[in-house]
Image (cartoon, rainbow, N blue to C red; front, top):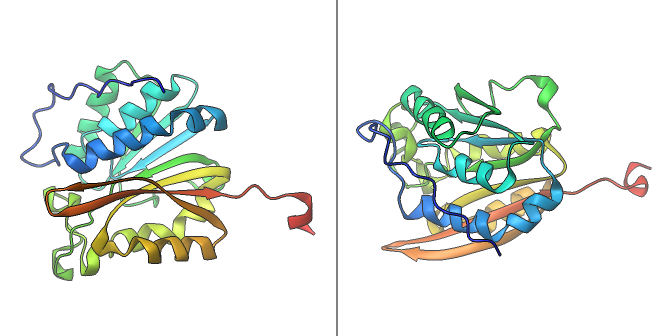
Length: 221
């Protein structure tokens, strides 16, 4: 396995309003590094990160895959979207778009079935529901009941946007009920597995992986 350096984010001066990379971010990077052979094998053309924040996760993915792929960073926080753009530009990534919007709402219906890699390091912290829905720093961590309210907004969109054989990576904590998430996604025909688990302070973090099964001729009958 090739060791991929952590993207430099020292140039960013936005942490009063954008989530600063922390243990969850670095676990996600480690998971992608562990998955690098698989990611290269599926030869993705379109890669999307929801909640791109500082941009280091999408930039790290780009450092694995190179310039053939097109990278799309989406964040509801306008300053986070700007930070993502700065990070990609700082690391000489050229094929990208940065969008300020919610979830996958801004993607054209023509993009359904075309996303080869989808990433989401969500706001997973259990909070009162009325803390969910902001567009500033709180949008990066306030997850509502069980930390699932924002996650549950994206899950129904995943299957329709993933390409056949496409993959979705999701970071969760124990309170998010990751086993239940796996069951929900398996019911949609996605193959679920755990990539990496790590305890960080009082949080048990897990990166989950969901692959959209390629349909065979028998499946189409």
